[in-house]
Image (tube, rainbow, N blue to C red; front, side):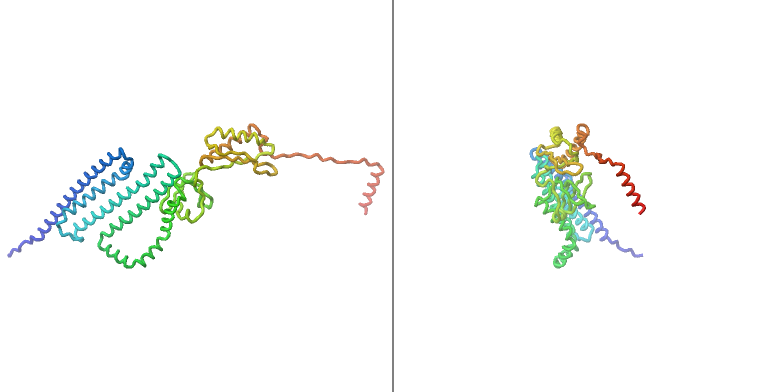
Length: 391
């Protein structure tokens, strides 16, 4: 029997591949550790700066965890690339695919870190409004929210596109797409027309200051009736309204740029409101006016700007007493109107009940005139009546 020589080339190649993997993984582990240490040092420096700079504390609140993750992934990728730099790596091999996966992870990690940092724009506006509330601060907060979302959208699109372009086949497809950019752009524009319209409307609202976070607006509801709500959030494509019963109404951004709507707090939040009472003509208007002044002086809901009591209308049965008052905002105005209505009704019932509207039935005396008739006249009329009946 003739012995066959052993094939040692394949076994040597396997051992070499295992050694390459172990070396690369060890380098990646060292890179992860280095990234973790670098993140600790960076966070420590930021904490020292945060004692004197409030903006640095905002950075820590938003980006601490994402900074750790990003630097550790970056360290893993750099360690892997350093240990595999002397190897001939093909994208079809296991090491090549793993290297590409690490690169995609680095891109996505930096994308996530950048989106977290974009929140600083809004955080600064929120902090400024909290320290000193004003209409200008509300405008700044609204614009900061829209700009933050716009930047995040751009960052996400760029990050995902960069990750996809790491594949050679995607690069070829992108080249073909750019070659036929005319047709592709037309198709993409038609497909995204509605979305882009809402995005442009959201940016337009923020830059034109037509709508701000915290504004009270009135828009048509689902059943056609008007709904009053507070602007809670302005995104790139829609606006969130907080209604009085704590429902949330989602309105497309194009509604506020293409249709009319009421903004009750465009320049200021102060408002005027009316309470109407249907009273009898005997109602003492001067006493009612004095009672209204007394009620307003005893409540903080009235802002002291305006108050009046007038007879605005009259019908056959009653007169309409119109009470006009002012308040700091629509919420206080609603409570103030209810308060005045309740207190005035109680006062009228207790003090001047005759001033309330009531139905009257007034009988009229009817006088019958009678004349004394003689006997001859009575007989004559009787004969006349009998003669007419016989006829």
